[in-house]
Length: 543
Image (cartoon, rainbow, N blue to C red; front, side, top):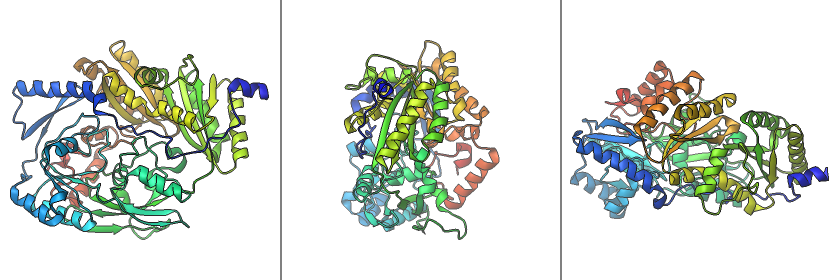
């Protein structure tokens, strides 16, 4: 036993979990320059070719694809009277017209999507959100709700001149019940602040993201964000007990319940979870937070092939059971990318490179029991040939370095050049087939990277190239969506549809389902002012 343990470099030290284990994936402006230049050059070339008036027709380069979006002619244009109304309602300081602030708010964090809004509002109360929407609805002024602006599909920035309603000033913790673990807070609370708050009281947030230092809970709820803990605690549909939302006409819908059980009528909060601000603006949320457990272990493992990763997952679910809290995977292309482009990142296995890597986290309450259970699982997996090598984090610094590898892939991709990103749900046994298919299609023209949340069947497929290229793009789309649809997958696992995938929804949803979604949208937002051009196909969402 000791010999095997030595070979495995498994120590007797248990990892103590911390809210600092994960890293903020928001990148510095410098890391986006090459990608931003590519998109900007594409946009400029279209203008030079005489493609329409920029104020009414916009061409977006999502990858290399130029997509035409026409501004809804029914929407009004902001005027000085509108600005005066908002200043009287909110005060001068909460009505932002500064060009530098607007430049940042008009652009997503990847610098892939850019709007041209001339006004940003910062409400401090639900009543102010209500008055803003009531006025905008009467004036037919389109709006875009915005939280931390960390999305990846263009859902939180304007397409044209929509008024930006930034929720960051609504950041109050309202109540926390130490008996039930139910937290009630405003939508503008930054996720990391909530993580720290509940941690101080002996609880944890059921949601943990790489962007937690910037993202806001209202945006998390509105996009039904997934993250690393979904395999243990499930999605926000199960953890959000209630919410408050403001409809397009200013009506405040109070669904801010704190009960685990409430079966009185339709559970309408689920309409707003994942609707990306297209049905209403979430202003308050009620979240169930589980008790924090004292024993946390993190193992970084190497596997020879994807089949071994699959089998390891099945065995982990059987043998680790109740203590399994995360199961992530990445391929050797992902590892190579991180080691090449991120400073300070080290290979846990010295210079040895393997085909696949898996991170397994366990969380429990009995240190000795959890340690013995994990060690027994790893030893049996090694003896069974499922694992080629592995190491358990000896302390919090090593744990952070392990998570840095997994969470740093997105940053490394941005530094490598142009990147085509796809967030897909697929049956676990089929997930990596798509990665291999794309490598066959693209050959040496681009690198295909596969990683993600294996524990819940979520593949992050990324195609990295020196620059955006029409020939590369033609090999990617619509093939990626068609393949995903053929295998009964989802084209959006956790990032949402936003602007990027609004017209692709039929690959995952039937026409009648989408038509019903459109009917709900028209019922709750008949003028279509809430986050227009997003989520639903433009043929159905235009008014």
